Image (tube, rainbow, N blue to C red):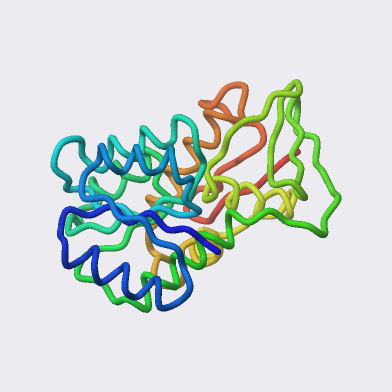
Length: 225
């Protein structure tokens, strides 16, 4: 059963999410503060985190950074903040998606399901791709360098996988955004800039002059093994 950690300081939001998630068969843990969120994340190992940014004590960005120090669990931000700067800050810290309050329950649940699918391991693939000193294992959804795993978030992996499965081909910005975040995000090119900067920092020898994950300005991205 999928376990969801809901982090929000508003009791009515926590109750509403808990009721809707439990009715659909999810296990749910609730946290009203960032400190409690980090404790529960470490103890309960959720499959996905739904996180508010405006929390008492440590804020949502610090929670994301704390979880990302040891886990690649999908993190969906649920916040009244809607500026591009807030979205970029959350994504740059390691969040996988951003939903603005007030929100539709059906949309949030759809995004939650998508986040869980992206993080689920594949069982029927055996292929791997060599990329310089890295090995990209498409079956295990992992990347290693010299035998050591390079940790990617589920969203980072999804972007890498989409390009690696189309070597040498231009994958449009629109296609990437629709595949990873959904059709309503097809204009959010800033998401791609943030994520590919992070991917290059992790996987390119010189992130400022990438050799493998290339940008085609105004069009999309290309993978060269």
